[in-house]
Length: 351
Image 1 (tube, one colour):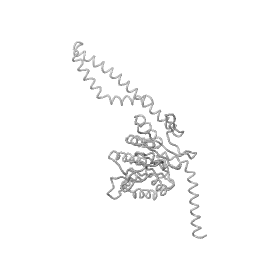
Image 2: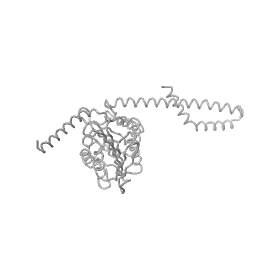
Image 3: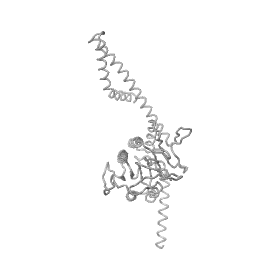
């Protein structure tokens, strides 16, 4: 066998090997990040940011570190004039790069060098974003030396990490437009802080999303929590979206809006049920605590009246009102601790 034939044979074997194992790996539950069996790598891409966006970077870094990511690459303007630096946090290796095109390429190659084809790659984008003035309307972000579109970045990611599982989280304006281009197989899922052609100007989504991700370790659960929070607090310009390829090879956007109401696919049904049940338990605990307070206030007010009458007599209304005012102020100052106590008592009672 010639060298050329030998090389072709090896290439075909590798191709069939990857094809075989990729088919098996399609059933991997990689949205459960905490329990993911392979290595985990993340890039936090924050090229054009304000002070408020640094909080998003810190929240993402903390979440990925708590979930034992093997490496976290941060690309931001803070390090634009210095050489890349490396630190560690909760055993995660954290690399910091300047906000340049070459930094993205270097970070991707660094991940390629330290991972296999079935490891997990997570991209979190925060800061300022825009969209291309085209019919497709792909998202773009501005780096220190150029503007890069989601199409171009996706080409780079697929070229360097073609077989990895991928989670794309777009937290910038027009994040849906940016994230949508990446979702082209069952090994990739995407999340955006807003829906198509929409801006994202609040910081509630990353705060709720990453705190829930640390607590649950599950991407879908964290998304559902952040979605419900944004809807509950009434952010008109926010409508987070989750995108994946279903078992039929169709790209679906979650939640599905039908008749003005969100509809959730089967893989979200259990998540939504658990979340809604927890919300109801929290509501009941809150209502119980409120009633507890009202009862305590009534009892304490009656006691203070009795004490004032004993000391000053029923005719001394001025002194009576003064001591009642003082008692009310004292009760108000400890209301928070009473609330916590009442909530604990309720939860203990329910268990």
